[in-house]
Image 1 (tube, rainbow, N blue to C red):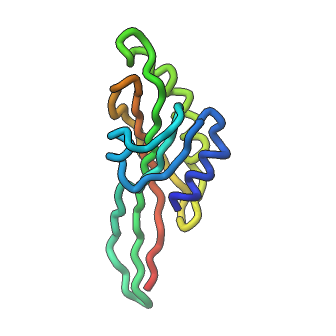
Image 2 (cartoon, rainbow, N blue to C red):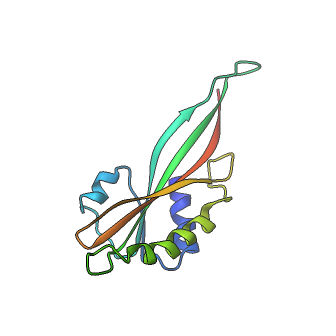
Length: 139
């Protein structure tokens, strides 16, 4: 699923110079992954299982949340005042590219859960977009 989201962002948001996946957001926040700005890092956030159904076979709905961490060069005298002006068109493009689209392996389209500023540091503003989809587990 993550790989298909990376591909969708790569082809659908031309403003992004880097689109990668990571299993650990701390690697990105710690500056240990190379990237050109603006950048997006797609990562799994959490899975939440619904109540199991056991007739006629075991099934459960798994709600899967995926984060898209957006990084842009911080703008303004205080290195952050104008960052939202740069981020807003970028997260709008990410939202219109992903919301309503169904990644491979999912049984429902992605829906936007929300977004938030993570931090502004070292000349970079970090914004996290959170999306959710569902898969049906059948055993």
